[in-house]
Length: 351
Ligand SMILES: Nc1ncnc2c1ncn2[C@@H]1O[C@H](COP(=O)(O)OP(=O)(O)OP(=O)(O)O)[C@@H](O)[C@H]1O
Image: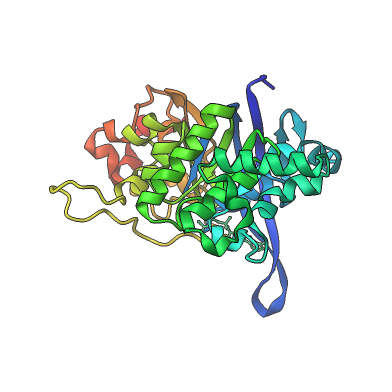
């Protein structure tokens, strides 16, 4: 593993045992062969429709769920397999999680200082005085007055509460934080402030983030690279400007097309047609083929895997597997290649 890779995920699978029809236990396959890295000081965005598995992936990375397959290394240590327990204990203080809802994340009966100090108290390594000094330092770091420690969560706004949650996440000086929709419960002006805070903290402490969000504008503002998930798989991962300027996977294109833009020529955003496939009975082949305007016969049979397609991008799509020159984006393809007729275009088929 390169020194600057903090998080290494390979072929991650996750299935939950649930009650199926007539109460029979059945497995819900939520993640399928996820692979990605996150570097030191890097923010990887994770986007995709609701239910695509983003939060499940985030929870696995902080040790909340044990995956059913594949491997995860944090700071070079596997947190999957037989060493899971020992390695998680060793890296726990360097991992944190910031949830969407700052109201639910804070105990209303605890003073803010005691909430922030929870990880310190659990670690049990600081004197009372050092702990209280650290709490004040953390409050300052997140832009709150030092005397906030004595107050209760209900005395703060939603944005301030999220600052308190972030202060608690920073208590043990982590290196990696999973931020799961950290600003989606806040109004737009608060969102900008919290995003700026997260970015300032990253610059100051070299933090790495997995940033899970629905809002593609927020993701673009905050991330370095973006991974797009569809029905439990990553379909495209690329540096953010590459992805946003020239989305390659048909699903990424549809996702970006669905974003409302202040463009008078576009009266309303395109919506992604069709239904999200069932995770219980996923379609064979490419899971997006049931909604894909470019689906070819082989898309119904073969599962595409992530492949390098240039510009630091990986895409899982049969359109880009051809033996001939790979187009830099599906948008650059001749019009005929965009429609269903591409099924018959041999230059777009893989060999
Ligand atoms: N503990 C669990 N037990 C059973 N199923 C679960 C569990 N956690 C998540 N799931 C299921 O896994 C699938 C993916 O959920 P997940 O929350 O990871 O998606 P998501 O992309 O984060 O969605 P959202 O954006 O709505 O939060 C869903 O079908 C969900 O119902």
